[in-house]
Image (tube, rainbow, N blue to C red; front, side, top):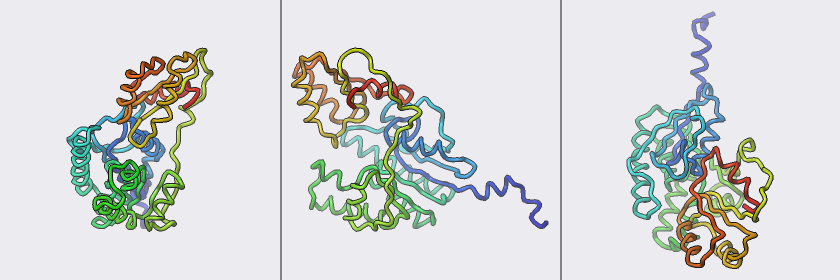
Length: 298
């Protein structure tokens, strides 16, 4: 047989698809996007998909002490992530520049997957698709500029809003596919002129082997907030409930995580003399199931 000299291993290598994933947060960080990407890459067979992850050096949340996913991790960007406005912009710019250099210096990927940290990182995916012939898929965790308008950071008809929208839609219309978190996000993209057939809804998930219910302990009813308490999250409902129940020991409020609104919430509790609230740091992934299980209301 003329091909008898080709080994099975060589054939297997020939079929391996090189995937490049670009997002500022990845394992061992436990930011939401990092956890979801970690789950996806842990589920990939390295014999079929050779995955390289371009990520930053920052730690957004707690550290995942679990096993490293079977991928090549390339860390980029010298500026650590900061929640301050200026520090955040510097961190985003630093990562974007470093990821661009490494994305073009590395081997050509068959497929590029970009998320939305930093915003508009999809542009890098568009460039790699255009200049290197890779396929490009976007996983939209936040919609820009919509989220900035909804948070009153930008005005709906401002020049900045229109410019960001043009740039974001430029990548969306040229992507091979777009993954969104729900039907509402899909409807917003369709309203922006993105073809319906290009968009796929894939809701976020939890690992049912790690996140399990547990018997409630004796004591007060626990209202539990886990994760980032950020600018996009409504706070009036919970603060009013805490104010009205401040002297009722049948209730306890637990906040595990961080975010832009957390410090303000802590100040509110001190000013109002609310002693039924407890504030904790981000929960490690190994302890997340136990932490969530103590909640009567999450």
